[in-house]
Image (cartoon, rainbow, N blue to C red; front, side):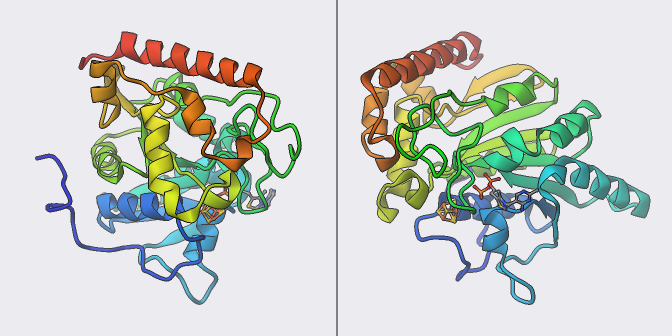
Length: 300
Ligand SMILES: Cc1ncc(C[n+]2csc(CCOP(=O)(O)OP(=O)(O)O)c2C)c(N)n1
Ligand code: SF4
């Protein structure tokens, strides 16, 4: 049965009153990830906005156990937790490694790549707010071309994004997926599916950040939806090599009604100095990836 607001579990593992900014998409995504794992989880997380969300000892906003790991070590920490649980004979707990794009695309990529190559048995979620937000929005490997950040303050970033989901797929792991905080039920179902699979599972979650991307706190859901409607973010999953478009991306593909990327960029102050050339380059990248997705989709 498909998950709907009616049959979604009412159990909460993320408590109200945590320390994220108003309108933070990470908080919404994390709430649904923990619901999907039904409290049967040990989380490992490096320094990030998520550690701020968790809170400082002796208070915390989550009801599940969590390990704070050094920035570069999330994949290794998850491997260690898996080995520890195996030694204790505990089979009912999932290990969830979850990190930002800085902790995944850049600083944690080595430990994650090694763990995936070993087919270590955990779920890795990268929540992508496209910058090192916790320390003031420095540019990361996931900051887009033309985006103003703390370290690209005037002209914006001069390089394109790294596609971490494609990099993880190249490891030959059994499940990779993209998700978006504006589509929490799609995210919930993907985590449920990943939970039932053995080996390294990777889910990339698009999480708009109002202060970093410079849009009003009240617009988070709409910005996430606009990303999907323009093809900036594509919702899909690849299970043992079979590619499926999911959620809102599937009807957009059927109707062929992608909106121009310009509409998405215009809503965010971080793109205020972007050039026409850069907009054309970004549109060409979006078009090329969209075509790759259409060519691969087995469910159209
Ligand atoms: C080895 C190391 N370098 C730098 C830091 C400082 N630091 C803490 S959080 C953070 C930013 C994390 O960015 P990201 O992983 O994208 O997560 P976000 O803050 O965006 O949630 C940095 C640079 C650190 N804790 N450890
Ligand atoms: S800076 Fe962005 S990602 Fe971090 S807590 Fe605030 S809204 Fe969330």
